Amino acid sequence: MDLGLRDKVAIVTGGAVGLGRAIAFELMRAGARIVIADMNEPEAERVASKICESHGTARVIKTDVTQSGQVQDMVSAVVREFGRVDILMNNAGILGPQGPWVELSDEAFDRVVAVNLRGVFLCAKAVLPHMIRQKSGKIVMTASCAAKTGEQFNGVYSVTKAGVWSMTQSLSREVGCYNINVNAICPAAMGTEMMEKVYRERSRWLGISPEELRQRIRSSFFMPRELTVEDTAHLAAFLASDKADMMTGQGVNITGGIEVH
Image (cartoon, rainbow, N blue to C red):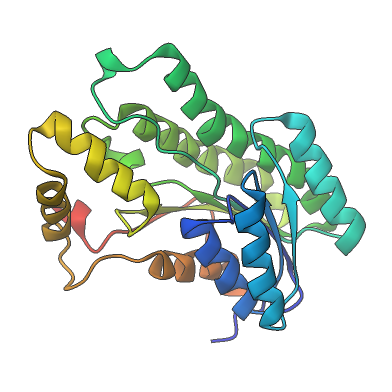
């Protein structure tokens, strides 16, 4: 299916690894020009090189999404080079420590909020003047199914993703009149380094082994296989496309059915 993304300019925050990397490749395959905004410059450059080897267009701008100046400079550089910004994949995020609320340090709380919530706000704030001026744009937030249910021993991550989901709804109401769509993807567990951290750390608080937790999470999927970053990247690309022009303010679950029960 042609998603209508040829030559669109897409910023992917946190595009060096995991879901962000999968989204960058998915958008490239759909014809978009990719800007990877990430602190992990070596991995981001590897992703950009592979995109260019596949005859796509990609560049890397090292960016700390918690720093307003860096975010503004990154978006300004994109507009100078490409003349516009069509898509923001507002994906950069961290998990934070797994454990009970009473064990969570103030510093850890502040760090997760800074990346997962402040960073999402700063990136949306930076691209919106350009999208409003061109009267078009797609913003796709990476939330989580944890945003809607909360997760035991994963509190601050759940709270920040709930904030992202709420921001999606609020922002979509403000900018729809400019032909700007704002949606969120809400995936369940995927095979990423982040999930490996979940298995290692949360299992200790549940009193089971990491492998037991892995099997418990796997068994909650109704579908016969695990969710992958590629599955989720397909959804993200669709929401960034012309095919989703009448979808906005949505938090779209991609979970293999785990939330049904």
